[in-house]
Length: 364
Image (cartoon, rainbow, N blue to C red; front, side, top):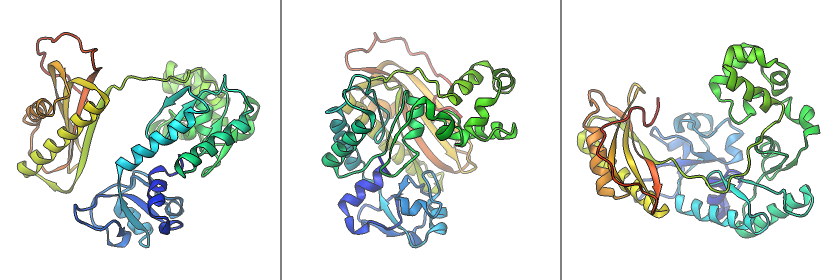
């Protein structure tokens, strides 16, 4: 879906179309529906933005204050997840009427297997776009290729409102000239290492010998890099994936060491995670808390329960036990809670004796 959150907001407020809009403002309980970016004060992060805002260099994950510096004439809108989830369900239901084999990759993205769907690729792509627009009023970009890896890349080539159909014969002309980081799975650190080796494009990566890549990245990742650069991907479209965990976190407007503030926010996050689990009929055995100090160091603690739970009070009790094991010797920038080791309703194993703690629930 194209700039999904922003596009949903513009359905509600069409008078804002064409303006640089930034989504991610934490609106006060009784505050206005929008805020000029020039008036923003805080430490929030851009969740998404319109294409007009992207033209100023604004992107997801950017600090809101930096976005303000780039485009003070922009407008902030608050997040409205209830609407986003509703439109997400609508666009996926519309797609399913044409192509029912769907892999859900989040609120605004899916993979579709068209193998058994009659019709040519271009015709099917246009039918899918029309169906989504009729159901939601929103536009999407589609990449149709032989596999998931190439389709992920292709779906971004002609945004917004794009339709890109590629075959393996198009690899050299359409894919190889792109930066190596456009391959989903090559993150910032890997892209930096490739750049140090003078490998900047997918085509340059494709020309490297696997033995050379293995010396720098290890055998498994080198093999994957070589296959990906040649457009090879055998992963099927998976219609169901069991979630590994549910989490919630928030960044404080001001760094704090106030135990009452920290406790109040942690309790709220525990309640939200419990509601998320209950809606999806999942329970979890591992409760974890994450803190990010003002110096950006992250500390985590977790606790394994005897039985899986989605009860807010039980999650809160375990989370506060975890919190009590974290030094509060400096101010806190962010706090989060996570429930892992999930089981669907009716799948919970027999209770076990409490086993203590497990390290690195959240990772570094």
